[in-house]
Amino acid sequence: MTVTTSPLMVEPSPMLGSEPMLELSHLTKRFSTKLDFAERLAKRLGAKVQEYDIHAVDDVSLAIAPGEVVGLVGESGCGKTTLGRMVAGITSPSSGELLYRGRPIATLPPDEAKQAKLKIQMVFQDPMASLNPRLRVSEIIGEAPRVHGLVSRSEQADYVAAIMRKVGLDPTFAARFPHQFSGGQRQRIGIARALAVQPEFLVCDESVAALDVSIQAQIINLFMELRRDLGLTYLFISHDLGVVEHIADRTVIMYLGRVVEIAPTEELFARPNHPYSRALLEEAPRVDTRKRTFAPIKGEIPSPLHPPTGCAFHPRCPNVMPRCKVERPALRKVASGRLSACHLNDIQ
Image 1: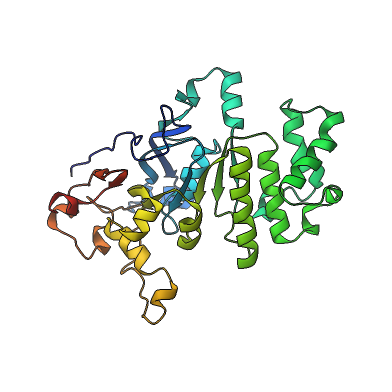
Image 2 (image 1 turned 30 degrees about the vertical axis):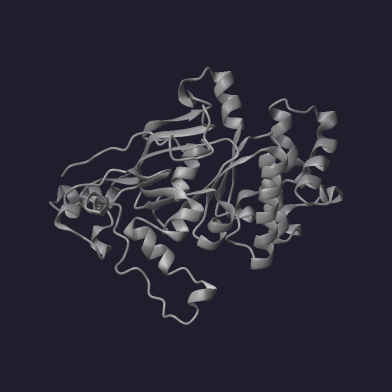
């Protein structure tokens, strides 16, 4: 099997100047499965059981410009959340590096690394699970900026009130607990908590998926207002193609831990290049296709325990060729600002 690694993707974004805000350089995350007592005993008795390495994220490179919104799309289990957690510093990569303002975070002096990590915050999918139910909102939002020296204890109440107003919450509710709020309000609390440490970059992991459609629109509008007012940059992870089309400047398509296509959102939705991208977009409900019969992508997403050789999508691809089964396609430029990992581009 021939494996080709992809270079650091700096060129595709039309918003990139001399220095990207954030660069992902060959990020990989492997999770090892450990044998439990029964499996170790069975192995001693001759059973064919073994430990496995799961490649949740496999050699992902990407550069994100200041002020850009990058949408990250793919089926459940493709590694979107793991990639987001590595960007936010919650999960450590197995290999590769993360660069902030051109400097590898892992090699920065402790004080500078701490400041760099504060500039990248995450907004989670389920606010009820990510907010401490025993803390009042004033402490949920105000604790981190106080601990990191951004505000003093005497300034905390006014600071929290200002942050709450910025995300559309009434500051008089600061003494309440998370369970006393609606789902949309709890998500605003989660956003306020992220904003409290004055970040420049937000990782939004399915941040509107658990909300009603009308509330989703409000939260999306809030994200856009914050981007305009605070100059924020986003990595917006979502399975909802409609949301990504509305909010993202550029879209990244992932499949089984690998990036298969990167393109400006408008161009990708109009003319997807990779067969997986086309399959995703063809089955997205739209008003102009309301009379057609929708069908899911054929086959099941392969297990990351036993990923296919060559192109990971080849078992489900309608355009599969013998080469696809043995050679992994490189993610390379196919047009201005566009990259795709498909052997079909070599014969077009």
